[in-house]
Image (cartoon, rainbow, N blue to C red; front, side):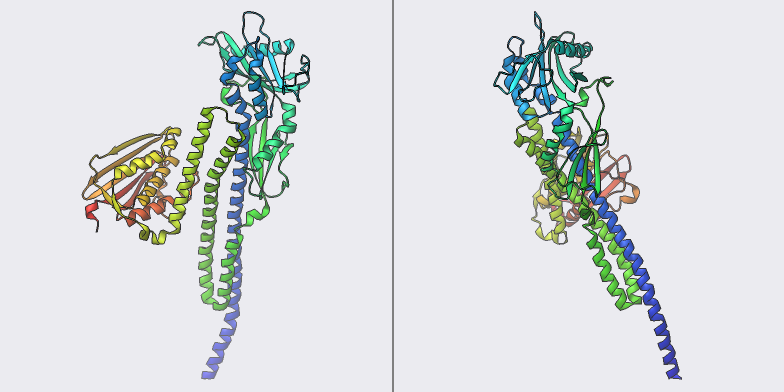
Amino acid sequence: MSVFKTWVRTQRLVFWLPLVASICVVLLGWLSYRAIRDADRTSALLAQRTAQEAANLLAGALLRDMRAVQQAVLVSHEWNDFSPEHPYRVRRLVATAFAQYPYPETFLAWRRTSGASPVVFWSRAERLPRWAGGHSGEDAFPVAMWTDEAVGRRLMDRITTNAATGQSFAVFDTDIDGDFYQVVTNLRYFDPYREQLATVIGFLVNLGWVRQHYFADVTAEMARVIAADADVTLKVLDERGQVRAQTAGFNETGVVGRRQFPLSFFDPLSLPPARPADLVDAKWTAEAVTRPNRARVYQPAAAAPTLVLAASATVFLLLGLFLTARAVRESATLAETRATFVATVTHELKTPVAGIRAAGDTLASGRVTTPEVLRDYAVMVVNEAKRLTRLLDNLLAYARITDLAEVYSFQLLDLRDLIDSSLREFRSRLESGGFEVRADIESDLPEIKGDRTALALAFDNVLDNAIRYSGDQRVIEIHARSADHTVTVEIVDHGIGILPADVGRVKQKFFRGRNVTNHGSGLGLAITDRIISDHGGALRIRSTAGSGTTVILEFLHSMERV
């Protein structure tokens, strides 16, 4: 009887083991497909973000370069030396502008005098316009100068329509001898009421030449800064979709990012509210493509855990089935979280680096000619460097977060000094963003015992979030007070706030609120919470979506420390 029972059990085992193994394989296949699909989706999102970032940088660089002549050359004080009797005095200024910027074909100037006031034209000696009939071509100087009564009268008739309404700039498109031009002029007046036109300074851009030559050179130059990564290629398309410039080895297949920009060699803010009827609104496109292999960089990270789970399921069968289902689900979540974290940190690292490199390239090229613009570039480099330093500090803190307490150097600290230091760190961002800081700090706050570097990082992270996620009401409040053996610091913003379901999770590593659109690493509050906890304090958050967030940091008095 016992032998029969043993045989029955054996037969049941033989029947059930293959069946369970088959179910495990089918289920594992489905879980593997889901994990790989999630990994592909995350990789595609990373590639899309990379391509869009490159397209945005290319379009932004083109717009800055296209507006530089209006913003830097036309407003130069050296034009004050121009007069119809001595037009040669500004020829060196014109030659310098021609050397720095390729797109202006001709500069023009007119000044009201007691007699006849002709319009004086300057062009590149090697690229004279077809209508420059009054120039002899015998001057060896690289800038040709002449007057043309018919063309000058025609341009002034159009310009004076803007002067009649007291405008500072006249911008329009016109045809001259079969060539289509964009004309950008700066109008200066005798009187503060802008009733008497005194001087006109401007330049003409041959749009036909620009289509054929300008964007190819600028795109190739920007590729050395923006597309240093060989996996990204760049292209510029006109309003009809025709390719006007592209980098070598452009790949038509891959993930594409696009950014439109106007074919405008002027600042759009200089236009009146109603766009002139004789100014064509042509929309061009900057396009960036990432190669296909870039979109699959992170797939092996999701496939390796799947193979491990397959082997475990084969060996352990029923136990492996349970463990596999659970591990695949957690592994897919972890892979997506890590891929998203890498994508976000990559963006956060590349954005300030690209900004610094672009600013450095512009400064090295010698295009910045005024102290004001040079100061703006310097401020931009400093801000981007601070942003990069803050991200690196957070990454280094995250790398050693398990033993963070072992690297502290405790000393007595003045909280007022820490808060002031953090505000100084963000001064340029606060000023450029139009923020109002309201500080209410008790004058006799007791000292706390802590590590200065760690606490400075904690305050920087909280203040950075307050700036980053502020809305239209750009007010940041800082309150510090002591009571019941506790020192409390509250940092309040009036920004987008946090969804109620996310308030309890924002202190977790890599987590970012679902209503957040700005980029971030998802580490700031997690590291801040750990630092405050290691100092015997607590971090609490109060927030209302759409109204703002209050981050509360609590510390014990220094005499309460053990």
